[in-house]
Length: 435
Image (cartoon, rainbow, N blue to C red; front, side):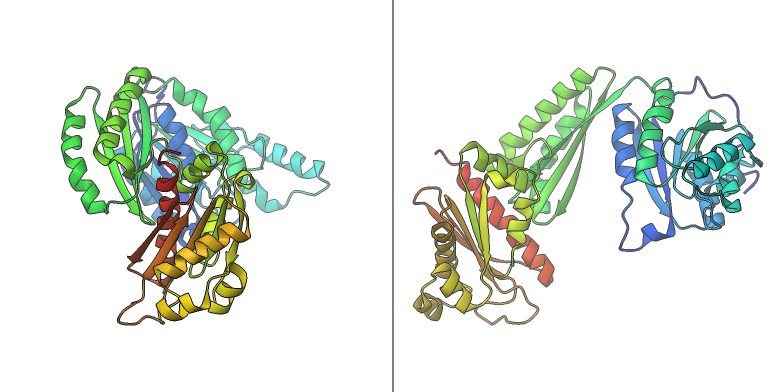
């Protein structure tokens, strides 16, 4: 894509960088088995510098497509970071595609090749000839040292903008960015700091939350500095991402504190956390603070609640254990659910959920018991109890018992995930009552 308008490059040492795009290269990341975690790391690091990431993309190992994506990104922003595709094989096209986008030639740096060869020799191997490709450097690029792997990165000043090439493996990318790239960027930022807060809400739907937030949005936009907000919904909860930009980070933090207080005033007990903590982290913290232990009795969720709680480090301090009682016989034998209660009300019912919660608390000698029973589908529903019907009970602390019945939409997995969120939120609300 020679002549795409990005030119041959000039010294950009005095250019101010306020915006960035991240381009992740790799066909494998377009499939279901691989996630681009590098973009999350880079976004966090750039935000600390006051550089806003306003676009991310994942591109296959396709020379022409990547060439076009890089050229288009440069037309929109001051900083383009390309990750991956710096290996020695034929599908590692990043160097060539970026060189084509910039209309610059490539040449092998024999110093890089010698360093790669020495690295192989230290491990008792002979360097394969294909590794010479990793010594290709775009004209005018500064080479970024790779202290972990063989692929060096590259830094290019391009018509008052910057292009950075980083390796794909996080263990190589992260130290290279922190030690080679970030110090250079620190001299080129606007001087403004971006401060962010994440508030998590559980209870209202996305549309109801948006309705209540609209008056706040208007007030926040009118402030100096302003507060921007993004709302995301998933797994039965709302994530509200707040951001403020200022030359003084303390001013931005105070502004966000005011915005968070607005949300707390508007949503009350529906606010799960104001510091980005997950629901399971919040529940774990409350159990730890009150020196309580929890036991789970799960039917349709089959251990998913216990899995979420125990995914938090240190959860052994408050998780006693769990019982997956899928069949009616298991409910009776393992949890002591009275058979006549199941016969009278059905396995998916509030009385059975209560008996499961109380049984888990008693059998495992815990302070809090949770019982969940439902119809996750796709079959098994009835007119009285359609697919998505779930009963959840929380027993304790003390003699208190709370039970509710829900009708969740979606697939079997959706119903199960909604059930775990609701169950944990009922525990959160119970534990936030006065002791």
